[in-house]
Length: 229
Image 1 (spheres, rainbow, N blue to C red):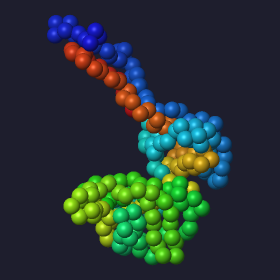
Image 2: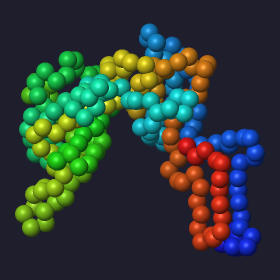
Image 3: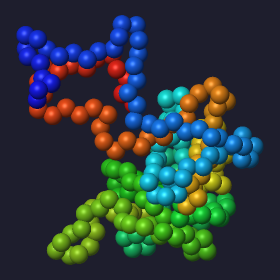
């Protein structure tokens, strides 16, 4: 409160004329080394220790995409580039359409399902518990966003339904396009196919859990000209 201004004398924090200050909640990632083809990698001990977890990697300020299957279809983002549920198998598992995935992944438990459940009103990202390739069944580590009907004890809202679209994200074997990345949580290694030479930009991950700026019980305070990212 003591940092408040008044109506006659407001407090203004602003960019210096002609400059563009950036307040970033990201951490720059360095120490890259060649891995395979155009893919590079770097060790992140904080990831292996469980101190860091992120789903956002930026290069030159642009969000990159986790390696996934199927790859998104830019010409048909609504229905192209998705796999589909054939039928639910309980609240935390579903059968996918046979032939949806051309290969078996070495570390499916490192992957997550990006899914639009029920009537596709919402989106959820859920860790994978297991994949039964013979039965075409994916088991999830938790239920998708849902509501439990206390009267019947069943899930009746936002649960899995046949036809729900999904893709599998964070799979090393699917890192096949520029701008994609994969995080090996167990070993603490980040793999990345940069869209341009690493020397031409900065790679950063989003780790900040608190707000970039916090104001409590202040009045007549203005911030202008800053980039928050």
